[in-house]
Amino acid sequence: MGGPAHTPGPWSVERVDYDVHGLDASFEVMGAGNIVAQTLMREVKTEGQRLATDEANCNLIAAAPEMFDTLSLLRAALAEMDAELHAQNIGVIDLTLAKARGEQL
Image (tube, rainbow, N blue to C red; front, side, top):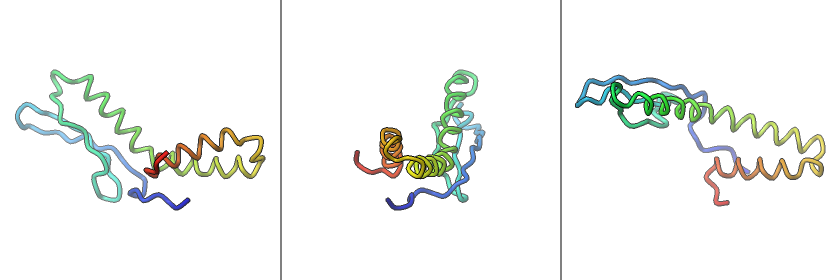
């Protein structure tokens, strides 16, 4: 298993406010000075709930590098304690980490 090829963390969420064609705001996930992910622009007056959902999704995305690292540490700790006892959990963790690395499952 190689290391992740993603932009290193930490990542942060930034709200971007616009005044163009009635589209008022979007969110960007930033990492290492680059945009990692960006939502659609939304009209705040009519799409406030979608904008709130976009922000929540971006917060989840921004936590991804730390979650990946934490899950990797947890996997190692479970294997060190008793790999046979925790085989099912380790298997689930391995599948999740593989998915995060973009590997075919």
